[in-house]
Image (cartoon, rainbow over all chains, first blue to last red; front, side):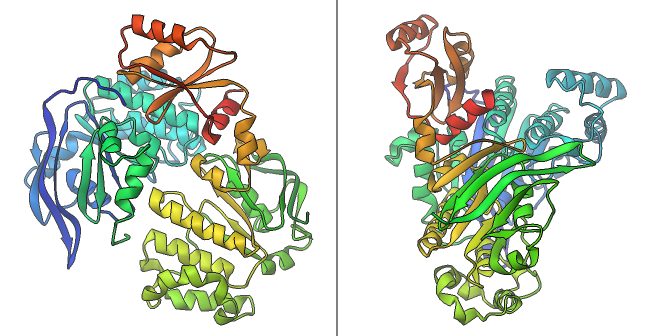
Length: 252
Length: 304
């Protein structure tokens, strides 16, 4: 979306990362780097291998071959340390519906070993920043999806991870709240947090510094959105995506 | 024109009336029409679908499907409509073929009687016909669910968020299937949170927090957009969005893919804005009049 000067410090280095399930190669020797403070869009059709790749980068799944270093940790040998240093939020599960906002914040802060002092400072800060003073003691399940996702994003950042992985964070969110969510992403990126994000909204692909598009387990394209549009002679990222993904042989 | 679905002041609230999910909603769907309910999660789309498919009772108002009342004639409605819920609801441990056969039998028919309706879709599933439905991919599950909803040749089908979480290519394919069904005369009521899908409907209702904000054809909706809309681009978009908030006469400014969209109440002097942005240090500035989209209309309505 803009041409912020990117830091040249690499925080994710992926080299020929591969995952096989029997004969099926879910992720096929992908290689790429992500820089500090970058907003990196990780796109692909359903079944292209995004989730498998993302699970490996979060230390949740052991690769069949290839390597990756995330936040300075080797995903083979240091999966546990890696998990302490990244944040994650998904679309389906992000917060506990039957805990209040403040309980969710305390719970996650506790999991990440924050001290009691840090927990009370941080939860107060978060509630004030989001203007949720009145809602703090409400159950998360009663919040509209958009608000829930904003809280979940803030919670994923509580332990100040170097990288945050966002898996379709804006699905089903109204157009205004979706944009407010992106304002929050920009603010975090400006502060140096690396954002690794998947989305099915192609307008959001434009908001990323760089975008990769996976087809059948491989990364078929990786560049700035404007470059990709130029390269594929497309008017929009939607068109770029369509040109690449319709060639896919497998579907999920 | 014959009316297929008629909804009149429909009301539904949950948790002892504390939360109004559907707030006096009214609309009509004509026979053979592809009608879209467009809105985010929590807008009340699913509650409307569940009342029209007679799965829950309204707290007020009334509605009819094919001339049948959703409260009194629920049995008849259930036999005569197709319904695809947002959540996958087929039998996961029956195979593809068994599920389809099961639903055909439930509706007193056989698969080959109405096979012509689902042929295009079912052929894509045929290689997996012996696979258990629970083991299918998301896209395949969806196609099977659509087949099962169509197998008794219903005059009207209700599809609740069939494309949520589906990638843009598969979404396009799904809408092409809907178009072909419409060509066969089936009335389709579909909901989606994706604004770009609105243009593929004959008419749409924009819905938020249980209330309908506007009903129109997609074309009329965008042509009635009341403000002057511009697409603006510069070297630093994040900064541009911030600066534009305070520019004179600007009603709204928001990111819109590659550009920012700015709306103005009256004519705006683009040269003046250009000079202003240049003074603020922006480079590679581009200001062009923009055609409003359904998403612009929705944002406008939400801001009112």
